[in-house]
Length: 611
Image 1 (cartoon, rainbow, N blue to C red):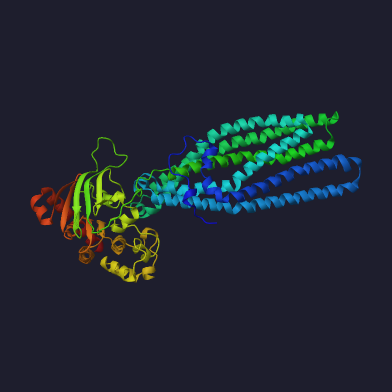
Image 2: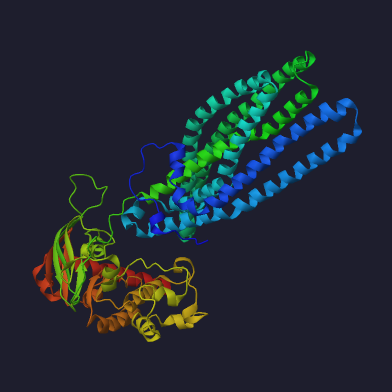
């Protein structure tokens, strides 16, 4: 069975029902479970047959006690004993069939949901990922979906079958003695009352537990990713203390869960025992006055013993169901998240691609920005002409990285428009937009795969010559000295490489995509002066035919540009050549002076490290 699910089977993203019942919350998973339901139904049938066969054994025992044993006819004992043996074998076969039917479908449900979750995470905007902890998303993709799989494979099957078995069993008990059967039914009423109270209490605790597990996963991930920083500053014990606090919070919640489960188990064990005791006194009395035969009394208690497991199982099956409801809620929280960066309903295409990039009265502010605070990007008007290289400079916090991120719709403008060859970027499909634009970030992110796949991420069908050319332009020839050359796996986030090596591979990735517009967010910050000079010389050849917008943190990077735009507090306050701005803008001269001072400090620090 395919691990993917067709679009028409997917739940529609949107606002979830207000405070849905447990049944409605779990039923949202049904579109993913639908292909697996026939086998789950077969598993239910097999489990129900096993339960009914178990209830049939006391009927045979009644006939045995009231018949051959009471009459002293040993010749009739063997047929009854063989009948009981046969029923036991049938029950065992049905249980085995139940396991066989439900084992595989649950894994398919889990795979479909995990693929859907991953696809949704890829589609959701960066703003969503800025707000959500990665550990929370990881716990939803692993722990929560595992809970849902176990419930479909085990919980729902036994819950339905055991409830039916209990009702059939109570009917059999009533057929022998309505008085004793009524005692069992009356004694079960507290179980249903406590079960309702248990749902309200346990659901809250279960949600808190799963959220805390996500926080704990986040703490582990942050510690692993920041292990170099923790070791360098000797903060391992501090991280351990924070982790221990979170772990103890989760431990406390898990203990609270255990107490809640113990509470319902108390009722599930105590009530049947009380019912047994009452029925024992009543049954003996009824047998003594001739209202009940010895065989019926024996079969009554044998049936009650068969029903004991289904009754006691209700406790952990209910807790599993409520855990699953919480897991489903957490899963759909992600799928219901609004995706504001989507393809237009009627997309346009760029008929005459020239490589012009224009910011037209662009505004941007984050969703959670306080009211009254000015926009981070506040009315930017800037045009980068086809084939032109524009450097973007400004002090830290002026909005440079945010502005260039708007070009590729990593974020969407909140006012104005970004135009690519005269077409609003929001009117293009994301796929088309990102074939015209490529971006290299200052924080170079690589994936745990080969050098070749990392560099060709934006253009996997590129020729070998294009790959080698991109590596040469980025001065990334060091890859040929790696153990497996271009097929060397760089490890998680490329941490097996230096910062400068990662930046060069990220730059090569942008160059290899062969875009008409290249957006570079200070991609040379981790390079030494000599390597930077070589990269800049090679980039000049690329930029001669490519439109480029470069965030510059070094004066040498500014020299690559045909023109320079000065960004100040979210506004473009000056545009011109480097020499023109030095002569006409005091703020630009101050920014360049600051960049030169910072560059000298970096050079001095590198020299000291080398010495």
